[in-house]
Structures are given as C-alpha cells and as structure tokens.
Image (tube, rainbow, N blue to C red; front, side, top):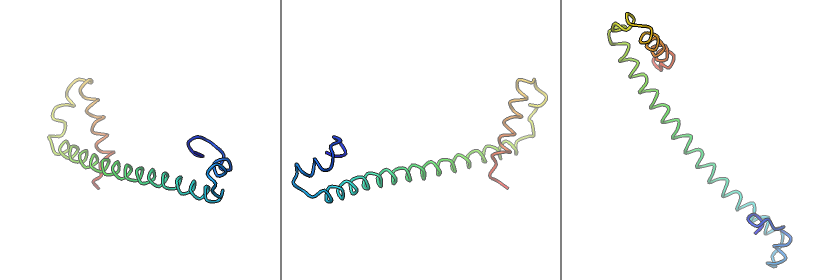
Length: 101
C-alpha cells in the first residue's frame, strides 16, 4: 500500500492496527529483496557479456591469424583503390585488436 499506492505509513498502520516501526521494517525488507534480485540479474548479464566479448576476441584473433598466414596481400595491393584501402583498414583492425603477443 505504501510503495504501490503511495499512502503514508502512518495511515496504513492506523488502518491495519500495526505499529509504524513494523511497517518500516517490512518496507526495508521488501525494497532489499527487490534490489538484490536486480543486482544479481545485472551481475549475471555482465558475466554473460564478458564471456561473449572474450569469445568474439578469440574468433577475431583466429580470423586475423588466417589472414596473416595467407599470402601477404594476395594481389590486393595491386588492385584498385576501392579494393585496396578497405583491405588495408581491415588489416589495421586485426593488428589493433590482436590478443596475441
């Protein structure tokens, strides 16, 4: 009633015939449970996102390693600027994001 309907604690305790201190204790307990559940949900989501980021970094490292192991430019650098410059930018990203030493 206090949290949902916005009634004052004194009004609610008067209607229920309970002490005001007990109502405040219930309110703290209710708010605490709700915030703990939200906190646990957020922590779990952060953990999942960190795992996903780590997996994506591994995939990127694998793709970059394959790219590095392939014949250097594979003739790309002899091509037109439309082909050449995007390839160069891709190689820069692979080198920047490399998790390998």
